[in-house]
Each structure stands twice: as C-alpha cells, then as structure tokens.
Length: 386
Length: 140
Image (cartoon, rainbow over all chains, first blue to last red; front, side):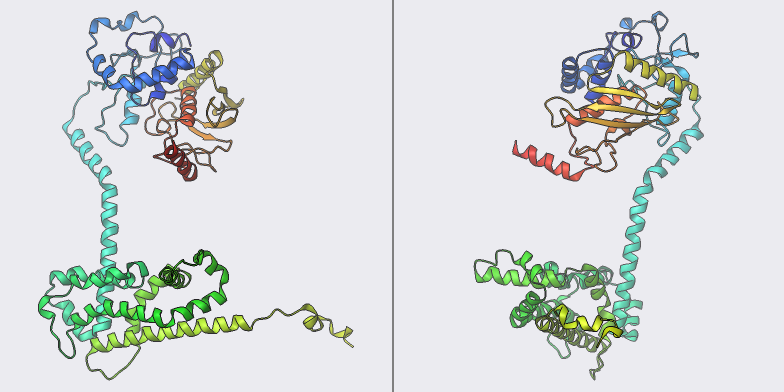
C-alpha cells in the first residue's frame, strides 16, 4: 500500500477520473482515506471534473518530477516494482502513473483490437499516449478499411433483413394478385410497366390483409384507398372498376362488422359467457355504468376472448386470397368472381363460427357430472358381478 | 504472462490484507491452489435498503488480466436494477468496456458497492426492481 500511495495520490497532479466518480474514490480509498473523504472527493470531482481537467492541461513541465528521481517506481499495469521486475520505465503522460513500456504497448494493443485507429488515453488524466512508430501507408489504409468493414456490419445486417422482408412481401403480393385476378390478367399486369402505385402497393398487400383482421387497426384501413385509388377511376359503371371495388372493400367490411355485431353480438356474448364464465368475469369487471360502455365491453369480449390468438389471425389473413377461388360462380370477370367468392366465404366462415359457439353453449348447458355410484358398477371386475 | 499475472494478484491480495476497504469483508482466492477464482464478501452500506446484509461475490479472473476485466458475479441473491436476479450478473461499465488495468479487484468491488447505493435505472438487468426504483423516484 505504502508503495502505491506516493505514486498515485502523493503527487500533486492527482485529479478527476472522468470514467466515473467511483473510480477516483476507489483509488483514493486505496491510499487510506476515510469514506467521508472519498465521498467528498468523488462528489466534488463529479461536479468540477471538467474544469479540473482543463486546468490540468496547463501543468508546466517543471512541476513534473523526473522519471529517474521517483524513488519507488511501480508499474500501474503489472504492479511490478523496480526490485521484482525488469523492463524499460516510461512516463507517457503528465500524471503520476508510470509503467513498463512493454506493459503499456500490450494495453494499447488490447484496446485497439477492434478499432485500430482509436486513440488510447491514460485512464487517470486522459492524456492521449504518443507513440513513435514507423508509419506505413499500407498499414494505415488497411486499418481504415478494416475498421470501416467492422463498423458497417450491423447496418448491412439490418439492410439485408429489410430487403429479405421486402422481397417476401413483393412475392406474396404478386401471388395474391395472380390468385385474385387470374393468371392471364395478373401476368399481364406484372409484366407491364410498373407505376409507383404498383411498386408501393404490391408489397403492402400482406400488411393490408393483416391490418384488416386486427380490430384496433381496422378503422385505419378505411383510409387505405388513398394509396391506390386514382381520381379518374372514380366512375360508376357495371361492373365497377377493379380499383373502385377494392376501395369499397374496407368500408364494406366495416359496415358488415357493425351489422354483425348489432345482430349477433348479444347472442355471441351470451353463448361465450355460458362456455367461459371466468374469462368473461376478468374482462367484464365493472360491467359498465351505461349502455354505451357495456356495448364496448361486449365488443371487447368478442375480440379478446375469441381473436386473441394472433398467430391464427395472421395465418388466416394471409391464406385469404387462396381461399377466394374456392367458390365457383358464373360471373365472367375473374377479379369480381374472386372478390364475391371471398366475401361469401367470410360470411360463411362467420356463420360456421356462430354455429360452433351455439353448439358449444348448448353442449355446456346439457352437461352434468355423473355421481360415482351411477357408474361404479361399470368398473367392477366382471367376476364379482352377480 | 502468467508470471506477471500471479505477481500482480499476490500484490493485490497483500494490499487488501494490509488496508482493507470498509464494507468489504473478505477478498481472497477461493481455493489454495487456484489464484484465478476469488471470492469477496460485500456488506450493505448504511442508510440504504442493503444495510445489515452480506453478499458473496465470485470473481473469475481471465488469463489476460489486467488487460481484460475480471468476471464478477453475485452468488447471493440481490434485488437491484442493474443486477440479474437469477444469474447474479452485474451491469457496470468498468466491468465491461470502461475497464483499464488501473482498476484492481478491490476497487472493482468498491465500485460494485457504490452501484448498490447509486443504481443506474437506464440500463436495467432486473426490470421489476428497475420499475420499482423509477416508481419510488417519481414519488419523491
């Protein structure tokens, strides 16, 4: 200890270590200061750290004790002293830390491992170490290239993942287009000149499909036609322009959902309550003060109890285009045939869903637990039965 | 390299024995024959929730110490925003990229003790404790 203190705290140049206030206090404590002192030093350093460093940079050379005159030298890296270690001593900075040249070179190499151009500084006084070295242009150039590559890896990774997702979205969009519009027409659209609307909307198709299934995002879907609808397409015709049909879909979906809720919401909730009274109790809680709030609770109930499974929701949304073609009809236009088929399919799915719920509730109502003595005889060994 | 490593560790041990920091009850190699695994016992600072408690730390020293920081973990469970409750892993800059050979095992332990009284809620390893710290700070 005694050998350490003259080196670190005995010299007039000791000052703040901006790594952290605690490090200074830690080193002061090695020199035997009381806790109160430590805390004081740490605090004052934290407050005035900047100004102290600024002042310290003007330290005159004359105040530095020459290296040869330091009585008990101690390397701040390996803790070797003059009598138990060999090597050239250096004082690379203005503070009291001295060390073996070899130790310091090792530390500099260790610090520069990842980034060769990084300036290594004294941990105590932050003076950058100055090296005399044979400067090679090739080494510098290669180091810069190496460091650039090293630091660009995360960006390249993010970029690659983004491209991967975008390409997947494009492919999915193209697939959805071909399924809904038909191979011939779809192929013509995909081959033809690509407008910015096409480039923007094709990869957005999967996003649109998923958003339209998530209740909280559903209302924003009403605005989505802004992205693909042209003004000159707004004409009333029969059959309507495909884009217009597409633009109507979110509104139709909204109206359908409202209507469905008005007509079947109460029934669905009551059936749900019969099957899962506990799940309902946790959501319903206060059971709403007024009718409005109760209605919202009911809708939450349907959404949360039934559609909380997001994996199923996303898969269902993405499978929608391939199910469009299941329904055959006599409409000549492939696109409208698909759309109408899809709508019918959704209505059919809801009907099935409702039936399932009704059956579940009915099944629940009919359930009774059998008493043991009612069926005990069935389990008795055959031999014992009279 | 091993030679200088042993010399430095022995000197650190002697320094601790000669002049131990308050609140640091113990700092020794765990076994006689392995100087690379140490244990430390930390006492909770007064006027903090940790007062009266004792925590055991395990210090694994890498071969290239002091060029690389020691690996310090809490062996005793502790509830603190910057310490992982299950593994005892510590999130402290000096044990990672702010390390320099000027630090010693003892000063690192003292830095950990200071971390106990000055948590750093911006980089939590224990989110529950962190949320409670933030909540308590908001109340004050």
